[in-house]
Amino acid sequence: MDIKQHWDNVFTTKTPSEVSWTQEAPSTAIAYLENLQLPKNAAIIEIGGGESNFCEILLDKGYENIWILDISEVALQKVKNRLGERANRIHWVTSDIIEFKTNIKFDFWYDRAVFHFLTSSEEINTYVNLVADSMADKGNFLLGTFSENGPLKCSGLAITQYSETKMKSLFIENFEPVHCFKEQHQTPFETIQEFQFCGFKKLNK
Image 1 (tube, rainbow, N blue to C red):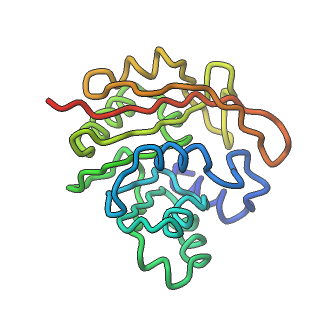
Image 2: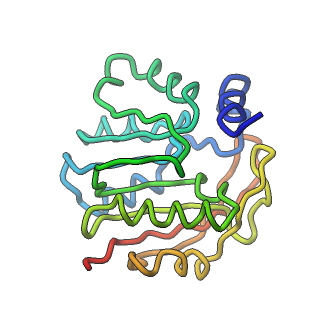
């Protein structure tokens, strides 16, 4: 089973209450975004949107240029069905993140728990370069991964754990670290997973 089939199978066979990453609401990302006070037409992308309600909250808050990327068409279709006609107000992208190509320059890039699935140096470097190339000048980037105290696997797949230092070192060439913090995520099964988050701002070169 390839990686796309894996995730299509996950979203076909499991409900949100049966997967560890489900959040009642992406409150960390929403709070971070609102603190930036971006205009409502800012280009915003969520990487690995899955069945998250991030896009619905953005629509409710009046944001107009929303992009949702996921490797699983099954996951995206579930969100489209949930949104109904409002789905037409969102740009949907079905792609493996390391194969994603775009001419859009994003003002806010949000990734919670996609980057840590990249385990080879080649994949990691591809992602680092992609973010740098895809961000507007002074654009903001919020990244969340399992911390060094977090799980070693997710959904049966190996992940890469990150510390604040390790995360900063990867992106320091093109981004200024703004705010890094740990977060204790309570899963639907009432277990705790520790995440490492870092917010970055694109350097003006």
